Length: 109
Image (cartoon, rainbow, N blue to C red; front, side, top):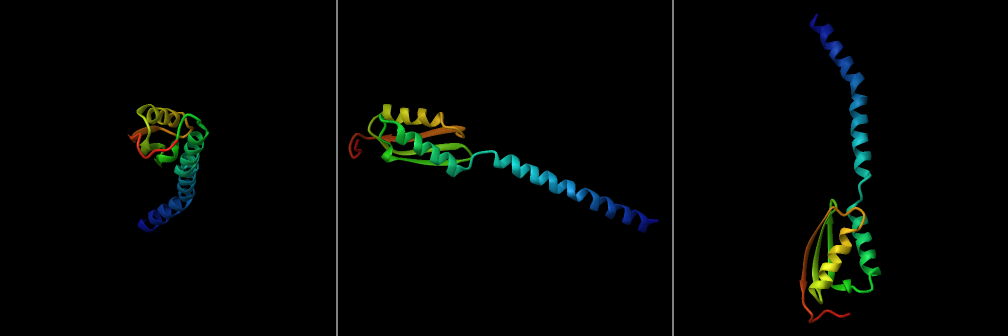
């Protein structure tokens, strides 16, 4: 009788293994709907470049899972704040950490 139970368990496992594969595949497809870090960074760079009132040449962008960190140097606090506000509006951005330093010296417009 134990052999019969063992065979039943093996057959059930064989029947349900495709369902596990389907679930894993579905999870990957759900994750692929999110934006990649490279895509978010590219969108941010494009938006900053389009803004005529910002000099984004001194700003570096790091994106991880939609969480964006801005670093570098801006000419004024207003410029740093405008850059962060612009980034918040970019598709795929979840949060923005604005670590931009303000220095009128060395930044060119």
